[in-house]
Length: 392
Image 1 (cartoon, helix red, strand yellow):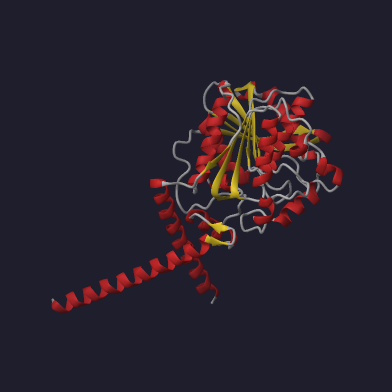
Image 2: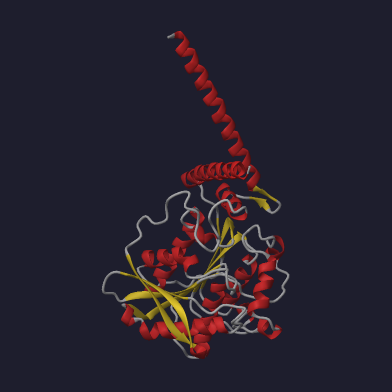
């Protein structure tokens, strides 16, 4: 019996030592990933970026967040999904994905444009499906997402013309989808944010459908070479968008200089933005597009448009795509939901524009984020070790 107790104590001690070493390794790895030349990252942001940039999970930034920590689908309503094609200019047709709640309606309508640098291979309906479902479920809206034609085969203004045609189609067909044609909002991220806001200009200029509101996640608002600090500091690609990709996007989508200056490609330089619908513009701290998005918010406000602007600290370009795994992503989506609900009621208020700084999760949310970050880190390190063993 004494011998068994000694063996048991030794085993417990060995287990404790191994656990302590593993914890030390995980802690050291997370601290290392958090440390960048541009500043210290929150733990969750650091491990997600490490996973993406090192291909440690089956993940593309434009596809879906890693299914390492469950969440994001709780409370989502059952939706009806339909994939169709609609005609656009030039006798072409584009795919459209539609999500709508069950019931008789009429429901408000959200026209969503996916990001992806305007180019083939960087984004599409499948890559943004989690955003579409979340928006439809939590706003009780019919969400219509057109897969506009992409560069380099289709250059400017193909994408925005497709977007405007989709807006007209949405107004004409809203009732058949149990949507309200008088309550159409537009929404988009990155390149899709560019398209979303541009078609509000087109609708104004062409006396087209009335748009109730616009929600723009980290939109690209200019193709010009401007001295923007965020483009200089966060353009390495580590934060999921690089200067080289931005240059490729311009060469592919807007290859001629006159295109860079057009208000329908670079809305930041439009002479007049008055008469556009109320806007929510969400930017990310570690994002090359941060400054141009915030400057666009200021310009809209200066031209008399009601604007709500939020900068989320501690996160990168594309962060709302990770709303199933990152609290800041969920917060960004929830802010968009609240704004869209206000659009439905028309209750925006009339406050002056100020940029709201959204801090990383605090309190219990921060503890949860930290715990999940360490769990993800353990998974990533384990997978890295397994891959090394397999290669050996």
